[in-house]
Length: 528
Ligand code: GLA
Image (cartoon, rainbow, N blue to C red; front, side, top):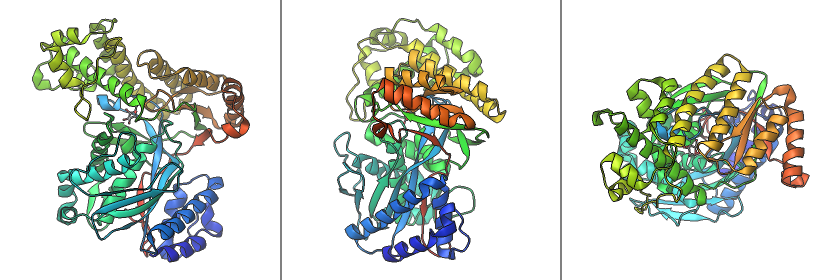
């Protein structure tokens, strides 16, 4: 459908009942669209703004790229309830996709070029060719997340196989796309705005080449890649930007379920939807400390991943685990030793508390310091991370990871059993561990967590990579107004000294929504 028609349909479709998410009375061409967009914005008070955003996107697209046949896409951010820095260690996480997303209006191009623009200030237009490989922009450039999503799909021969011969053929001579984006996920706030952009770019690229996503809920018709598989490729795809992240953010942005958190297990990726318990709300609060994954936090994040890989290798040696058992991650140790997490933590006892030097680790591994650094400490650009001046803190890092993995299992049981107090306590313990053992908190996050508990939260913790960003608090539904007021007063006004205007929008209850999707405005409604 052309932009002009889409604008007319949008006006008609979202009139009256549709704003309340009611698609009855819509023509069949827009009913799927109305349902999908309303589901991505479950808070009715935010729907007029959502509608207005789609209108600006459609008009903006037409002004920049012409009145073409367009598709719509969105990819949500996420908040992690518990299980921090466990994913790349092969241990589970428990996130939900939130009702903040990046949205796109796009159209395929006849050539192999990509042009992306954004309505958000500071995101200058980017254009590139579908080369193999696509050379990255300088570190920190937002266009690299678009390139990451596209390159990840081009790279994956497995994807072309799993998508069937039609997908393979389409990607032999791939088409590019023109897209206009807009997002409302707070940036550098630990809510995965960057992974949402990777996921969105990949879906847009696939759709531009006629490839959909098979979510197991009825074939989308035409070539499609299985959702779980795609989530795994997307996790690898994001390594393009230099982070050695796990797969949580991409998996939840792609596979999230309305009203549910997902317990996600890794290697291989598996998901278990967990209904959110009635009577409580998860409230996000932004510490206002930026946690951009591409700035200083990138090295700090990657250093944690390196420490964990080193710890797994050292522990495998100390425990005489045979090389055939292939222990690469701390999670593998849990598996190999069949200890389950409760006995996993004592593994950390084999390590000494004092930080390790590279020389000592190399000795333990029967290797040279140089070989050890090259094997475990490489950046994507080939350079080697210098050892941290304070040494590698193998024991506290191991304790955090193994204990946090266990807390995820316990939190799952608590949520399934409706034991909110127990779930809250586990969130508190998780924050303490992130602060003291993994050292990814900061004074502002610690203060915000303290204030949240004093304001009535059953539990509170930092969420995401850490080093800034947001906290997540579990709050009884009836306590939300008092909680919001207390945090506003004690943290934003008294601790940070912010005006009410500057604090506005920094604290919000989050609602779990469905994962990323491409939506077509055509008879038949929703697409991939
Ligand atoms: C970032 C990474 C994730 C995960 C979290 C910490 O968001 O992208 O893979 O490691 O940090 O839990």
